[in-house]
Image (cartoon, rainbow, N blue to C red; front, side, top):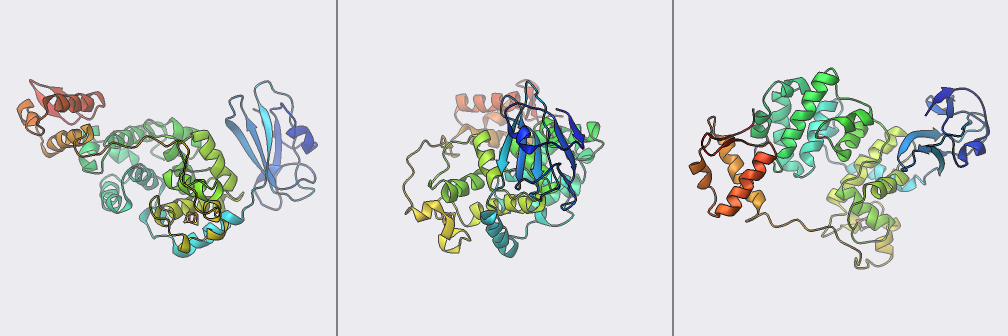
Length: 375
Ligand code: SF4
C-alpha cells in the first residue's frame, strides 16, 4: 500500500469499501502522524488485506481542520473505520496499576529491549519468582544478543536449568544469532522484524514491541484473556484461544495514546495475575468491580468450550525428558546410554522422551557415543 503526504480528501471516501492509498500529514496538535483532512471524530483507520490482517493502522486525533484521508481503489486492500474506544475502563486499570503494580526488573526504566525479550520468553510458562534470579544470571552472562550468539546453543540449554520447557532456551539462542547477524546486535523495533526472528512467536514479538519500544499493539496472555472474558464478556472463563479474536478484543480496550496503551497492556496482565485469578478472583480489591459484567450478572457458571487441560507433570513424558536433560546438563562429557537408562524405569517411555529431545535439538548423540547438549 502506498502512503504519501498531503492531499486533503473527504474522510467518507476512505471509509467506503475498497481503497489502498492513505494520505497522511503530521498532526499539529498531537505532534505525530495523523490522517489529513477536515472534521471527523477521534478513532482509527485500519487498512486490512483480504485476510483481515491489519497492514496499516492510522490514528485520528478528532480535532477539526487537522486531518483528512484519501483512498484510491486497490484490489487487495480494504479500509475499515474503527470508532474511538471508550478509554475509561483502560484508564481506571492504568491508575490502579500505577499505584499498586509490582516493582519487577523488566518494568524498570532502562531495562533494555534485550532484557525485555529474554524476560518475556522466560515468563511465558514460568512463575515470576523463579524467573527473576535466572534472568539476572542470563543478562549478566549474556548482556547482549551477540554474547549469547557466541556460545553453543547447548550452553543456553544448560543455563536454562529448571525453568521448564527448555525449547525456549534454543529459541532464544536462535533469535540472538539472528539479531546479532542480521540486525547489528540491536533488537528490532518493527513488529514484522520481531515476528520474523526464529523462535519468537506472536506474543513475544508484540510484548517486545510494546514494553521495550513503546508501540501500540495489543498483547494478550492467559491473564488478559481471563480479565476480558469476565469483565467485558461476562464469562467465567475465556474458552479456547483465538489469536485474531483475542487481539481484537484487547485492541478495542486500548487507549489511542501509545504510552497509555502500553500501560494498559501491562495493567490488565497484572490484574489477571494477582487479582482476577483463575480460581479465586478478589473482586473486592478490583479497580473495575463496578464495571465487571461477570460480577454484575451474578457470576454465572461457564458453559462454553474449554481449552484442553495440560496433563499432570508427575509421570509424564515431560518429567522423563527433564530427568534426562538434567543428566546432560550436569555433565561436561557425553552421557552413556547406561546412565540414561538409570533415570527412569519404563523403557518405552524413556526411549520416547530421549527421541523427543533428539528431535527437538535439545540433545545430540547415539547409543554408542553417548548423549550431550547441542554444540
Ligand atoms: S470484578 Fe472480579 S471477576 Fe470482575 S474483573 Fe474484577 S476480579 Fe475479575
